[in-house]
Image 1 (tube, one colour):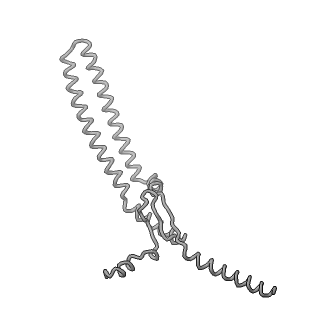
Image 2 (cartoon, helix red, strand yellow; image 1 turned 60 degrees about the vertical axis):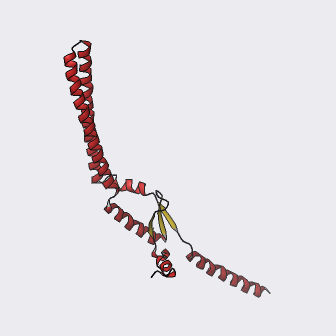
Image 3 (spheres, one colour; image 1 turned 180 degrees about the horizontal axis):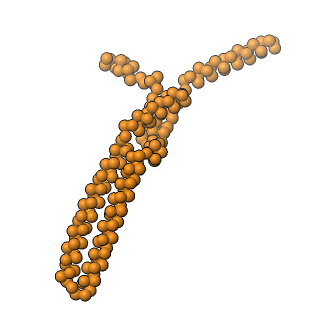
Length: 176
């Protein structure tokens, strides 16, 4: 009787051992990536970002300088108005209008330039190639089947070809 219990226990243990191995192969592992965080970390110290930040600071310095000029002219205009010097007040008003228009045009042009630079940084092919290669290495070594982006719940950044059933679906639909 003890011998039967030992044999039964051994068979049960072997069944559990082999079943665990079979079930572990069927588990699909997913990973997620905060791509915005990776993007920021990648570009934080890059030359293109430093160039962008430098231009941004230069543009802001110019805007601050022009704004200060306008404030100074507005003070002069107020002094002329208080001293009833309408001719000088009108002359200054004309100058203020020209400088305001220039500042508005300058600001708009520089904002467009900065937005263009920022967009080109965000869509850098070099970055995305490196990101894909890195995700591929991590996924393969970590046993992941898919890597998803936290920024876009529907975006699959990398997947193992073993989970791609596209050709099978096309074949089943008779579209080959």
